[in-house]
Length: 82
Length: 82
DNA sequence: AATGATTTGTACGTATGTATT
DNA sequence: GAATACATACGTACAAATCAT
Image (cartoon, rainbow over all chains, first blue to last red; front, side, top):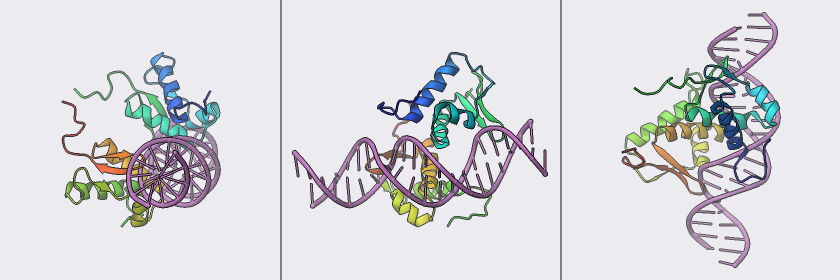
């Protein structure tokens, strides 16, 4: 799934893959994304790399992380400045 | 300089310290911040921790990093949406 | 033109802390 | 208390960009 020879680093490839899933509605708003442990198994990368990917999506306002719980897809109208 | 017993993690303490320096004008806009190697020596933390601190300031739009060059204090009117 | 030094970027591994269930 | 999940920190290695020699 990860192309190690691509000009775009793995953490961005993963961010793109997850973004696509979310945009496609495969993971609906409010629902949880697979945990880091699960993603680790799926993508075969270190957790550090996954954190960077998740950080990209957080910066985009697409997901939120909650310590002890998981990574959640934000609802469209959530935390949007009025 | 870093209080390991404080309720706020080291990377945030460092971000605060650097922000204070910038706001106080000790590092003027356009000028470079000490390199990660130098900050490593100054604060006595791992580079990973410094990267997180710098990331905080980047998110605030206070600094910019340029690969191969350094970390720069952004000018007040730089990259502000019109 | 090419090499080396400096600096940030990315990735991996490990350990411990903290919050939630 | 135990299990699960994210947060933080340290260390290491290599890649990529920039600059000076």
